[in-house]
Structure formats: structure tokens, C-alpha cells
Amino acid sequence: METAFVDLFKEQGYDYVHGEAIVRDSRDVILYEELRSFLRERYEADGITENEISAAINHLESTEGGSVYAQNTEAIRLIMKGFAIKREDTSKPNLFISLIDYNNPKNNLFKFVNQFQIEENHLRIPDGIVFVNGIPLVVLEFKSAIKENTTIENAYDQLTIRYRRDIPSLFRYNAFVVISDGVNNKFGSFFAPYEYFYTWRKVEHDDEEVEGGFNSMFTMMQGLFRKERLLDVVHHF
Image (cartoon, rainbow, N blue to C red; front, top):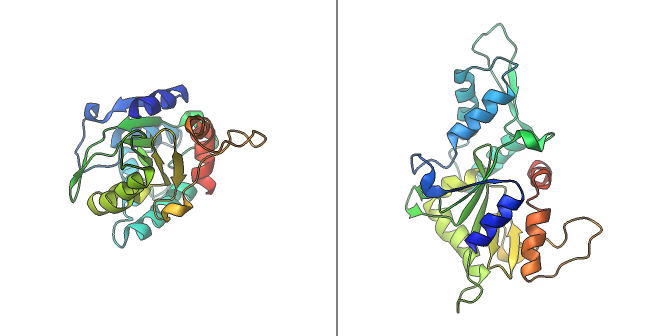
């Protein structure tokens, strides 16, 4: 399953890297160098400084405190709408920061990472994470369709019970999650009941709907995870 999704994300133009290849503190859920690189390039013409980049990232991370849901609500608001930071040079007006370039998908850094170890309350290794500009927007959990007594509902439980308890910081920035065994492929809000998870049924509006099966995996990848579509969902969902 992981291999199939790796290949499908590559087909959509995402960079791929195995989690073990990323040098980082295992407590970090943001790929800081990617986020800094995006902000540095996006606001180069504004003369953004390294301290201002740090201030922008600190503002995103200041959503700590309260429930996971409350943290997520605030972080996603910042990711969707952007925010202003004060300049080091106080004679300059505040600089408005957008963490994602929604108008130009090609200006963003899309990456799919599998086996990304996170150690918070307990060590956990999510099967797959989609990062945009270093921000972990989507978490994927896979199960085997041929393994007895295992369903995608088990993947749902893994995410919403064990991962929520053990690595809650990962879901501070989460837009949605995906549960899949290849045959059954569904997505939904991390905070939604299982019955509110759905199949992405068509790539384009006028396509014939796909009910399920392996075709639903391709429909999800070509529809939901096409770069401009993913950004549209994150921006407006």
C-alpha cells in the first residue's frame, strides 16, 4: 500500500522522501527548513529577514494550549487566511504573511513522506504525511485489504485514538486525514465520526462517479491530491 501511494504521489509531482532520511528532532512535526525556504523566497522582494521568518513560524506555533481541536481551528485559520507580523525595521509597515501561495501552486513545496517518526507522549510512526511548505496538512493511514480482522475503520481508530493521544501536535496543522486499504479509500476531518468519511468519487465535475474499489484510489489521487485541487480544498473547506 505505501509503495503504491508513493508512486501515485510522484505521478502528481510531489517530492518523495523516506522519513528516516530527514535529519530532524523527532519531536518536530514541521519541516522547518522547507517552511523557512518558502518564506524566504516568497518575501524576498519585501526584504524579509531571518528574524522575521522566525517570528512568522513562531506565530503559527503559538496556537499551543487548549484542546487539539481548538489548536487545529486556530492553526488552520492562520494557514487559510494568513496574518501580519511586525517588521524588524519599525519604520516599515507590517508584513502580511501567507504560508501557502494559493494562487500559484507551482510556487509551493509539495512533499510526501512515509514512516516519519514522531516522539511526543509516545513514539508513533504515521504511514504517510503530505507536507506543503513543510506544514503537515494531511495524514494517511493504511491497512491491508487481505489481512483478516483489519479494516479501514481500524486505520480510523489508529489515527483518532492512539495518534491523537500520543502525537497530538501532528494534528494541530491537519486539514484532513485519509484511511485506505487500496480497495476502500476514504477521507474526512480528523475530528469527524467515522460515518462522515467519504470516497472521492470523481476527478472532474462531469466524470462518472466511482463507487469504490481500486479505481477510487486513483480517483482520490488524481482529484483530491492534484496540487491545485488540494490547495483549493485547504483554502476553502
